[in-house]
Image 1 (cartoon, each protein chain N blue to C red):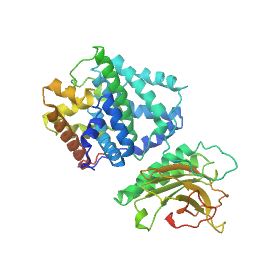
Image 2: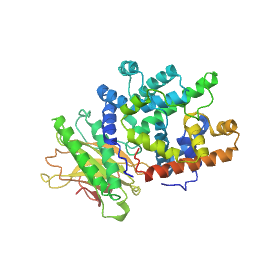
Image 3: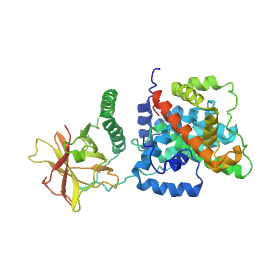
Image 4: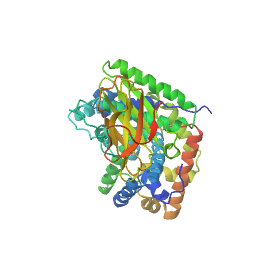
Length: 254
Length: 193
């Protein structure tokens, strides 16, 4: 855990809810631009939340559940936060993406898994559990043919990067989540490709723009139909993307 | 000591379904988290059952609304839910305090009530509850008192300093050390949020 951050004291006060409104508003501005501070707060909040158990435990009144279900029946949910533009991939028309909510969360789980993998063999078991869950989801919903892929790099600059794809072969759509990606040079963009043996060259799945923290979570749809998504790859290309891969592949799924 | 491995995947899957507008999943998720949340509300609202009930409903509605914004890369569903719930709860405590309707002293937990055995049996993560209580009890008395005040009172650090008669710097330092020590001890005990 990072305990050397200059705003550690504020992070503790924020995590425990000890700030007044003005302090909180100011601190939240700092959180938006400081990923190390954000990570510190996330860890501190995890510890603080454990204190919820330090109360005498009571069973809620049974009628609260019914009242709650009634009240949410027509309640609108907030939209998911996206911190980067959607992948730009030429597509004739939009399709339903209702399954993407599931997939996006699984990408989140998978990215956590990817990050931890190097730390502990214990996570191998979690990976199996994740795959089993994917399998369960696929079998529970016959229309969903989900495939998950972790992209890796042999280039030192990109080895900290975490890239996970969840691909729905039936819908021909996917979700990509990137973390800790270095910024690309001026005039360049990251571009996603799908390697399909049916096609001579990788199929364009669009460009991806990461935010200042190197993060992006985007939906994508390749420009051509994919028979078999053998690999997923990310390259660095000219800004705006190119129809065929020209630049260096920096991340590739096994 | 056997490490405790709570079942986060179940919470994650449920919350993901909640994010998709699934009412049945929300019912299941409510049943998994409502006990600790309601208990926290009762404590912060000094046993006022009507306010705690309203707080539970309001907080769970907020969890429903915000579920699509949950980011599993940043926190567990339980941590996220407690933080959202507590934020609304602190607002309620402060609002009531401004109307002079909330009692002042919440650092000391009231004696366990008769239904706690039943509540603990119903708790999804009984082991976590036991573990957290044991680890907190191992902190120094002053650390426990100030950390409890910090988490459950809804007061700012300045207010805590005034109410306890301690210098603000001492309050900040004690709370900081207590939280860090709690974190380290929980990690050593294998707690996973």
